[in-house]
Image 1 (cartoon, rainbow over the protein chains, first blue to last red):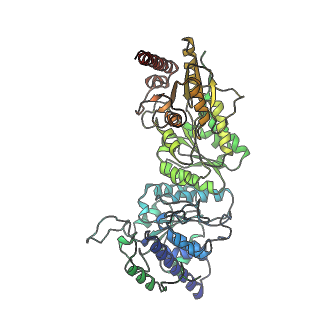
Image 2 (spheres, each protein chain N blue to C red; image 1 turned 135 degrees about the vertical axis):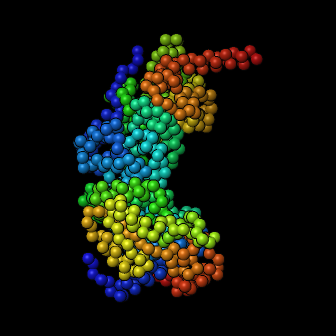
Length: 294
Length: 324
């Protein structure tokens, strides 16, 4: 098991998560369109992966022995782009081209345009299958590569996810780590008690039970507790012959109070006031460069 | 007079990919539980460690292939066309065609010869679907000789390819001097009275039809188009201009496949009336190979009949307009 992180290292990861959130708000605000709730719920996990756990070389994005990350919930692309930019894959200012015609930062990730993307995604359920392919290929080639795949909890309604979930344990792919961003909301879903209430995509405990039943080693974590996130990711990389599913309990829209837990912030443009409030809550001056100060 | 029988393409498939994999360690075979039918099992015996059984889960299989391709492997994905193309279509679109990843989709049991399985397995519209997909090379070999060459070519080509393979033994069109080239159509019979354009295992039957027509004094010019994308536009235009009377013949729907490709091409480059023979906007059904060929008008005799009928109707109309 990995050594405990120092308080300073943890603070650095938390700062990166904060800056990923700033990049999300700025990118979507500039584009006047884009997803917010999902990228914000994923930000802490993305920070832990890109700034601590994954073995990567931003200046050599095709390094064959790199760990892979696939954003199976491709609509959270702006969160991944913010992480990649902060990690040095491309300039922070480019975040402001998100969704623009000709941009490398497409609405959904396009690996043919942007170096650093390990798979194109956007149609739900597919990233986990591609992750199995990378895990199988890495093992056949004798490379010590870990493949991380992030799925949404709503995405787990796709049948392909369970085709993949069935297969991975058959091949004992313990170099494959699925992370379910369990933020308890999907785009629209089933109505709850009030008009703005929504039933969760999966019942409490359901995702853990399902992945366990399919033969995965399942770990659960508070997806906003950075120390816990780092611990669970490190634990997941120590293989025991089974693929790993991490069910990360998160809050959709995390970090911006008026977005938290509200389904309609799945995707929505911000007003000027909402933008100002969001930036203030993230502790970021409105007029700093894209993605926060360099 | 009729062309001789060749070997079954599915056996050629299993043998050829195995042989390629002996020389190329990057080649892997993905199967969705149909290996004993598609003859992917031949590969399994030769290279068990590179034979990846994906189970009855085709959407996942195409996604796994895409992932494998990013790690430098060359996946040959094998199952029936129904499950290799149509069922996992969005996975093909997003993960393979849009990415340009190096995946070979080998659709077995193509066309009418599906072992009396009927409507679900008899896919009439794989060629229109795959041909319409940006970035997808679409190849339809005529016989066992060409199938082996296409598979060898595909292993060396970097990018997505759809290869349409027939289950049963078909007639042999080519000898070993033939050489497949991507995007090249081949004149397999010269004639000055009518142009017949065909693809896949239908071409040998069209050549036989041409012999029947010759017995009636009609010399057919026959063009074989093994690559629906990229299309050999100059060859199609030249074949059309050879006689100015064109029929297309294909083992599938006449909408959007070879007939679609030829009519699109000629509309732009050399407007010509084209009669499209094949399945007339219908699904298939169970039946023996020869029964189905008769039913859909694709046996040599039925093709010859339809060509003659078309020529006669044309002549009648021509005389009428001359008289007018």
